[in-house]
Length: 219
Length: 281
Image (cartoon, rainbow over all chains, first blue to last red; front, side):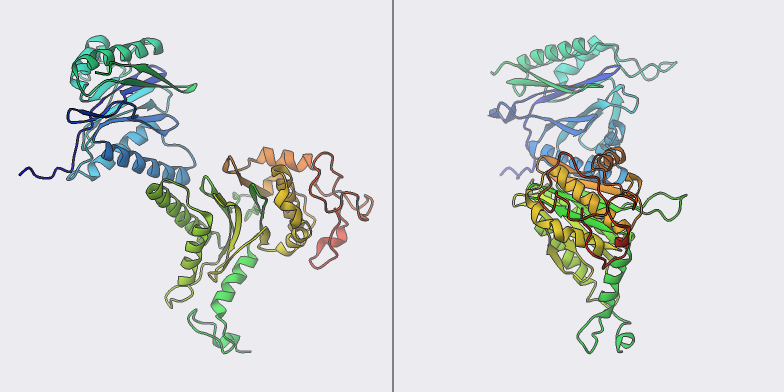
């Protein structure tokens, strides 16, 4: 008899790339379970604050619960501080929230993208229990094993061991970053069965938030 | 005569069937600086007088945003008001989290009233010393409630609490019938005039009053000082000196705010104390 599992993996991939003054966050919109598709247009991207966007993949129920919790905490923050949370602050909050459930984790693989206090793009990448790091780009989810090596090849993130320390921000223009993301997903869709249908891209910069969609293979 | 014997504990009744501690708590509300609320079918406006302790200090915050659709103005012990605002915010957030919809205002005020009642029936507690004007919008329309330390609450078309609120109430009583159909701007103007009534001759400036609005498609927000000063100037409701013509019944009368050009508001200075003849505008 197979034991009841409280988790399920609803698949999908998420990517975020930080630029000098922008951040691109993207994920596919397929929600699946096992070998079946549940829906082709479910968004994995959630706006937490003006300058902070969360993209998560994994177990959809936990994703939704996490988004609601962070939104409620953000409201409390706004009441207390009279301003929105910055992306680095939200980054720490997300990590703490995930670790809080260290012994019954949120089955979510998160990428947080936004603008830091200086207006530069920032991306934070997480594991399921809150271990996190600020990076120039990241991919999470079922297609991450296909996307990440490609991003490494294209974006060559400088090693943190280098001296003098180099910027964690990729020297890429906004449109180049968007094209890169589209390429990533088109490739990942080919080989990952859980990724496909539609690609949702959100771009955050000084001018605000911009959202676009690109169809992906539906097989 | 018996007041002093039965007023030590909140849980002690007087022979006349009164709880003096609760009544004393309501006195605390009357000592606080004025807060005013008015509502129409689509908007609710809160306004209050902000007096600073001294020139060196900042003004006390008396209006709090509770949620996008609810705000509250307080009079009395502002610390108690701050704590209750935090409670209200927490209730709204929890309700939104569970039901994914905004907490109806009527539910919130009942919870607030029950919380206040608890403090009137525990010997180790004291009643909250703050009156709250709760302004909010929900599916059933615009609402203005007054919650008092006794645990009672009432819904109002317009109300004023705090010191010298009677002057504002007199003004509101004359005008309230037109509020339901008022435009948002007229409602704000009436609120500012009501605030001015409580100032007893002092000039109305945006630095001593705070105005907040909530309405359909307009989340609760506090108007900023410049905007308020512009409104005060535009409505020309800064008090004119006594040399201006004394007010006989002026043509504008009590009709619902006609907007447009307003007569410069003129008040005979004799109306400075409460209980004086109602002022003509």
